[in-house]
Length: 246
Length: 313
Image (cartoon, rainbow over the protein chains, first blue to last red):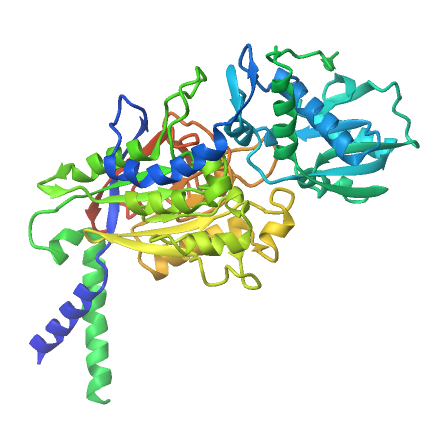
C-alpha cells in the first residue's frame, strides 16, 4: 500500500515542471556587413525577382546633386529643399497662393545622395503614402504650430523665416511679405499625418478649413526633382538660414 | 473516511515533504547525481524597416551595412554551433517595425519582409507603429503569410479585422527550459493615422506587463520571461518606455526593445519592483546589427542558504 502511494507521488512530481534558474547571461552585438557574413544564396535568390520588379520603377534619374543633401537640426539643406519643393508643387496644384509649407522632421526618412537622384532616392526620403493637405488657419494657430515644432528643434518649414529662442518662436517673416498676426488667416500645406493630429499636433484638428489637394507628398517631390533635372543644372545643396537660433 | 480522501491526504503529505526538499536541493530529489546546465541563445532584431538589401554604397554612414541574406548566414552559423555535442538552442525574435522604409514596402506591401523572416526561421515578432502603414487589412494579408506568431498583449483588436490573428504570448520549451514571450506595442494615438489602426484599443503596458509576468511565471511555470517591446528605450518625460516598464513590473527577465532605433553597446540592467535586474537590449535599426544573448540555466529554483532568490548578475 505504501509503495503505491510513493509511485503516485513520484508520478505527480515528474509531471510537475521541475523548474530552471538562470546562472549566467552574456551578450554581444554582431554587426551585419560583408566582413561578418557572406550573402546566403537561397535568401538572395528569393529576393531577386522582387528587386528586379523594383528596379524597373525606381531607377529613373530625376536630377543630379553636387553633394549629399542632408537633413539637420535646427536646419539642413534637405529640410529647406523639401519644404520649398512642397510649397511650389502644392501651390501649382491648389491654384491659389499658399503662405507656407511644413514637414515633420521625423517624416524625412533618409538623406539624398551626391550624383544621381532617382525615383528610388525619393521613395527612401518619403516612403509614406501621405497626402498634401492645405489648412486655412488663424495666426494664433499657426504660431502654436510653429512653437510646437520649434520645441526640440524640429521646425521644418518653407516660405517662412523664423527666429527661435529656447525652443520658442521669437519672430516669423513670410517670404511673400506677410507678417504673422494673431487674427489674420493663413494657408499652410502639410501632410495629412500632421493635419490629422500626428506628431502630437492635436491642436490642428479644428482649423478654419482643411482641403485635401489629392497629391501624394512623394509624387509632389518626384515631380519637383524631375523638373529640376530638366533644367540641366545640378542641385547645389545649402541651408539658407531660414531657421535662426538666438 | 473513504479511501480516496485518505490517499489524497497521504499524497499531499509526501508531496509537501518533497517540495520542501526540492527547494533546498532540487537535483538530489529530481535527478540522481550530476547537474546539467542548459544553454539557450536569443537572437534579435528591431526596426528592420524593410531593409532587405544592405544600405547602398553611397558614402553614407551605414553604407554597405545590413542585408537580410547576410543576416541569414550569421544566424545559420550560430544555429550550427555545438554546445556539449548538441546543436545550439536558438530563439530568434523581432521587436517590431518590420515594414516601411525602402521601396520594397511601397511596391510589395511587406510580403518579401515576412517571407524572408520565414526563411530565417524567426520564432516570433511584435507589432511596431509602422507595421500599420499599409493599413490594418494589409496586416491581415501579410501576417497571414508568416510562419511565426505576432505577439501583442496590449492591443485589443476585437472590433477590427486583426481580431484573432495575433497572440498575446507564446511559450517555447528548449531542452526543458520554458521561455514565456509576450509583446507590447506603443500608444497608437498621435503616432499612427487613425484610419490605419481603426478601432484597435491600446491597453496600459505596465498593467499588462505585470499581468503577463505573473501569468507566464506562476500559471504557465515559465523559467524565463521575455517581453518583445516597441515602446522605445527611454524618454525625457514620463512616457512609458522599456526603462519605465522594467522598473515598474515584476517577473520580466529580458526586454527586447525597438522604436527609438537605439544602438546599445550591451544590454542595460534596470532593477524591477522586486529589486531584480531586468536586462533591456536594442540593436539600432535596419538590420545593421543582430543582437545575441547567451543564457545558461541550471535545474531547480535558485535559492541561497537563507531561502532568498539568488540574484544573477
